[in-house]
Image (cartoon, rainbow, N blue to C red; front, side, top):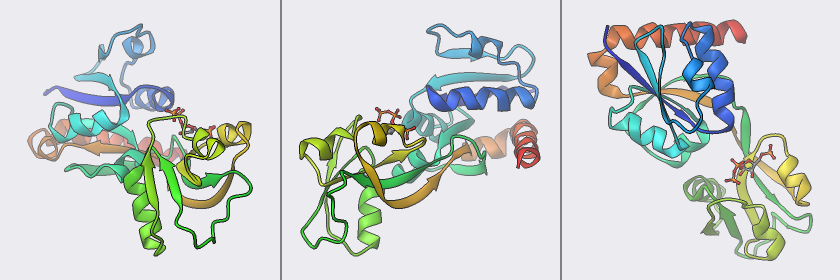
Length: 211
Ligand code: PRP
């Protein structure tokens, strides 16, 4: 049996992905008790895992270092890569939204400044609305930007809405629903067809059962 490397993201999604992998029979003991390790073996299968930042999941899968990746649709929408998106896992659900302080006027004709970690998603959204905006790329804690006058509004991920609420921001426009996706390296799907589909088919089954 050929080895399959799965790239996972650190953080929130990781906690929801482990139960899914366990449901398809992959031992995740090392992953659950990881300390500061970044590479893990599964003791009962041909699978191993790497734990990386979300956008790096795409890079590892595109280059075939990882055969499979699990990553949010937000990251896929922001970064175009040569890989296959195989399954909507129905976990890690959240949305992209335009948010700001209550005095923001979305229908104002003044050219808006939008702060975001997702410049491509934000540009595409406003372009499709026929609006010319200035985008400012921020690496995190984007909610601060409209509060301090760096931007008129933000484009960001909203999950529970707690971060917006605690910073006095509200959602003005819902953009896209987001959820985690299983992605695959194109060559691995051909070269390791049997091993790849042994995993992909099982994941698909578990996702269907959970719907
Ligand atoms: C994301 C997003 C919001 C927050 C939304 O940030 O950018 O800040 O989650 O979640 P909520 O609606 O449940 O409050 P993340 O925690 O990924 O990190 P960041 O600080 O790097 O933006």
